[in-house]
Image (cartoon, rainbow, N blue to C red; front, side, top):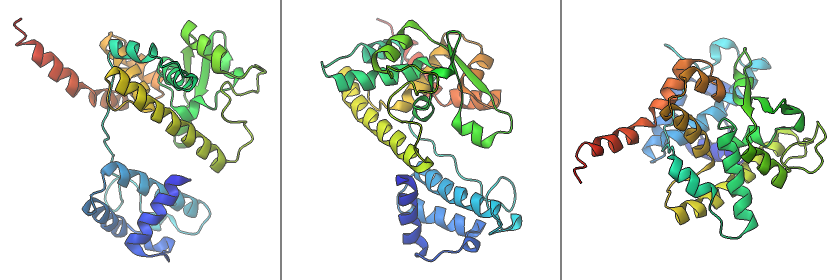
Length: 285
């Protein structure tokens, strides 16, 4: 909800309050892009705001408010391809992960959000939205099974992701999970399962925000800058790659649609690794 409100304010500053669906053309989107970048906004912000516009246009197309020919988004000539926002991506070393997951300042809140971060890392880098919607019925024969909400919406072929429940994951479930382990109950007690989509999104956003706030404190204490919930997923993938895991396995466990997506995803982390390895070449001491 907050993101749509921020996008609405941004668009109204650019084009006024009365905007018709038919006003949203490829040319309009390009001018909006120029406007945002000219105001010093990042491509990450541009990507987020234009995806909000695309969601509204998708609904307009679905309900017949606009025709297919009036739909501006897509790849290729005559369409607007939303730029990919490349935020700073951080993948942790094993030593950094250890320092984070063993850190405690004696506060229960710190330990809870630290453990939620650790669970995300161990559970195939699951994002917080999917993690908070896991139910006890998703546990099958020592594994947690789920579908990524992101690919569930966009892909025709639905890929089930399966993650082995380690002793550490089970300990986190036992400590912070719902005590009533009935199959339909959510594992973690943040959602009730009765929220409408907007309420659900708000709660997930709030939990993620609180976790990131606590991770910032933890990161400062252990010397890791830029620690957020996303780092759990990035680190899961790179730790496996650096350990020699098969890229097809990494791709499947991340829920990617193809190997190329995984290769591009992993490549974005390797600059720091190359710099570190280059330094070894002149480490004469």
